[in-house]
Amino acid sequence: MKALFKKYRNHLILLLVILILAALAFSEGGWQYVEEGFLQGVEILGRETALLIAAFLTAGMLQALVKEEFITRWLGREAGFKGILLACLGGGLIPGGPYVYYPIAGALLSSGASLGVLIAFVTAKNLWSVSRLPLEYGILGGTITFRRYLVTFLIPPLLGVLAERLFGNQISKIRESVEE
Figure 1 (cartoon, helix red, strand yellow):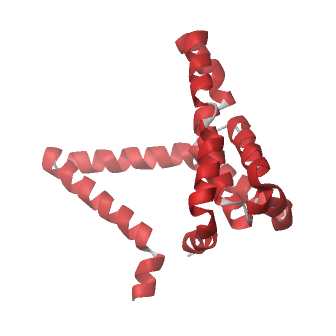
Figure 2: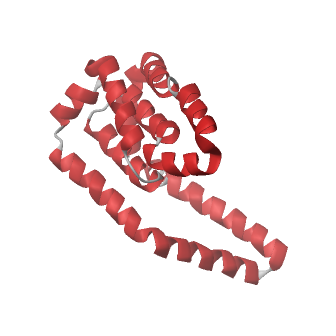
């Protein structure tokens, strides 16, 4: 029973959150609010399904094409700072939102990337996103955009190095817990 709970723990937590939100919706507006929330969730799922499928297929193809030895050599713990810098570059350049880059980060994790690389990749995606640059520049202007990039420039590599130094030796445990 304990192993079954551990395997489906995240699913159960999400189910609990859904039940709590449904209870709150019911208390605010009755079954009409619960139904409205359910229908909006189904609408979002329908709208995003193609993107989710594409993201997971991309992650799967990357795992099939890029062998573990390559990931370990270029993005594993032995790659050191070079791997962290490559992850920063990849994170900043990859287009798309979390539906795209989290499955790719998951593929890198299961293929042997180091913790510092994963932290640098996700952080760079969120801070350096080149695909967001035209929109940010168009709405906020060049001064704010330039200063934001300047202020955040060192954060992804520094967080990658820090994560690797503090917690890098726990990557095997992290991999095991994610794969369960």
